Image (cartoon, rainbow, N blue to C red; front, side):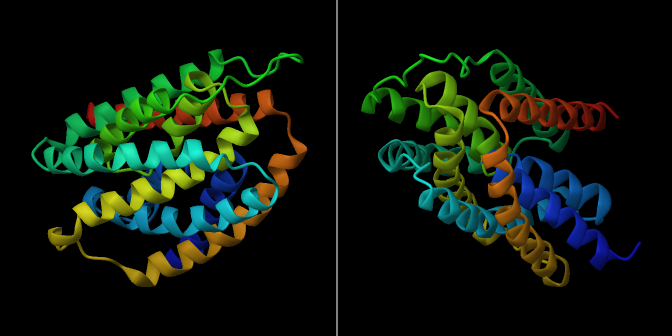
Length: 250
């Protein structure tokens, strides 16, 4: 199968993940770029951030028009996470690649467990009031992990927004996209001087397919219940965690 076809197919899947689940784009994009398209880990990380930033912006617009974005909460998360993300990105450049891969797998597995155990389906359950200090603290922690692992952070933002701040799944999905965009831009800024090659012949079609997939993902999210979205999201995270952990141990 040609590289172009693979890039288009993988991009469409990543777009569906971002549009429907509000996260998982970068955690899926990095393995796709490495194992399907032959990118090095460093190049895949940078390319995925570009892809996910563009796709998340599209998905954010569609969720915002449906009223599923909590702008205040998302802004607190994003602003609090920028300095830790920059510092952690600098630290990550000094850590061996297998250690980063294993940390990535462990974090994805933890996020999946939290999604499986988060309670979002109780009929009478009301979202908790958003406390600025709590949101900022969770955002700073998320930014640190995002900067260290070099991914957009949606796969952590969604469970944090659900289980730490008590947002319902669809609101967490929409709000996480704002966090993904800001965290991804911060991570890209930290990588500006690394001179990592960017293969635009692959990145461009991958991004285009992902953007189109995000529109379909938003429509898919409207047809699936919150608990079903949580289970789907958690299952994808567990599969990716197993793949990355296996790779780190070899």
